[in-house]
Amino acid sequence: MATIKHLTSKNSNYAAAESYLIFQHNEYTGLPILDEKGRPKLRDSYLLDTLECGESSFAMACLIANRKYGKNGRREDVKTHHYIISFDPKDAVENGLTMERAQALGLQFCKDNFPGHPAIVCTHPDGHNSAGNIHVHIVIGSLRVRTVERQPFMDKPCDWEAGKKHRCTSAMLRHLRVAVMEMCEQADLNQINLLEAQGDHVSEREYWAQRRGQRRLDHANAKLAAEGQQPTQTVYQTELDKLRKQIYAVLNKTTTFEEFSALLMQEHGIAVKESRGRLSYCPPGRTKFITAKKLSKKLEKEQVLTALSQNIQLTAIIQPSSEKKPDKIRKLVDIQANVAAGKGIGYERWAKKFNLKRWSQTLCLLQEKKLLSEDALDQRIAELQTQHDDALAVVKDMDARMVSLKELRGHLVVYRQYKPLAQKLQTVRNPAKFKEQHRAEFAVYEAACAYFKANGLRTLPDLKKLDAEYQTLSSEKNGFYTRYKKAQIELRELRTAQQNVEAFFRKEERNHAVPQQEVK
Image (cartoon, rainbow, N blue to C red):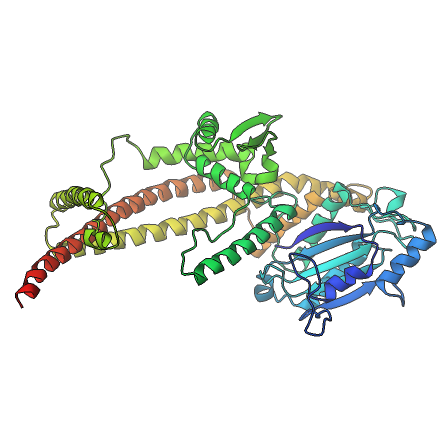
């Protein structure tokens, strides 16, 4: 899934852009890493080319353009634009993506979308987060050095005339996302729909806050480990990440929007409001609400209502009755070990009562299920383990089939929605202009056609039949999921009972062993 990110720089030192690409830099401070002689260290591997620079360096080409047109002299002027295209880590293994191929794709992308700008195109084999993804940096000078032929995505004369500055508008970013999708489609690389938000929205600022926080936490935990202490936290969470997890936790156990908003306020102090059909959330300690768009696609109104409706169906299937649940069987406490560790006499009294109650529950359970022999208990646990594993395997298989059906349905809906547009393309006077005007729509339409071709679908299935099949799978999956949960609960109870029996008889053996040692 290739993605594209845009950054700007007001640094008048144009050589710093190239220096960042070829030398190692500290990812937290941005400062170059020096060797033992105080010289910057080269990166282990990179490929670098320049465009529109002639015989000059990138920095010199930008400075000559600035002087020629009398621009970029103020401190607040944007001097360079930095675009980063990151490819899916799986592309290197599954689709044969190499650094050379990525560099060629980056060069062509730069020529097609940033003509007339001095540019550096540099490919690195891995990201700073060690994700294994090949990525391409495209750094362009903000000033165009020559007039170029007008392209369909260019709106105003400043987009193609010499001496004008690059404009990264929302329309331009949309065009670039579509261009990345088309590039991956033509190169047979993994790709997602960049025109729609995918899952949690993590901004650049939040990403680096999490990285810095994790680094501080790792250093603190290393000190604790050196002192022989156990760290209490190993993963650092930003405030926004904590907020997401709190909202998800409440969303997974509620069935109505009123219950969802009330429980959020009751358990976590998070306020929810709806404005113009959009949800926003305000955690305690803040006065300004945070829009769902800044948190996650899953927390927007439509997705929240869908999740709540699914919870209603799941509750009706898994919890058909509201009978009072019996107390869970819990493990016996090792009183001697805890007293030896420094627990007082008060703890010993409480533990004896606790163990007596749990041992009584264990015996009642074993008598109720007629598992009073060790062989019968082991056999029943083995049967339950088989039922548990079989049901879980079926649930996972049905989940995979449902995901496949959902993906097919999505492509089918897109295909039917934009097929009239594709047919209209055959009749318009200017097909190139028409296709450029609806470029995003044609991109997803062609992706749907490619999906059908890749899966050998010559005749498209009926949408109603797909929905019916999905509902059937969902019902069957819920039935197997009920069996899985039932087996899991009973299995957990019997394993706990088995451990309690073993613990009880170990205690009896210790009690009988002590007098024998005294007689000796």
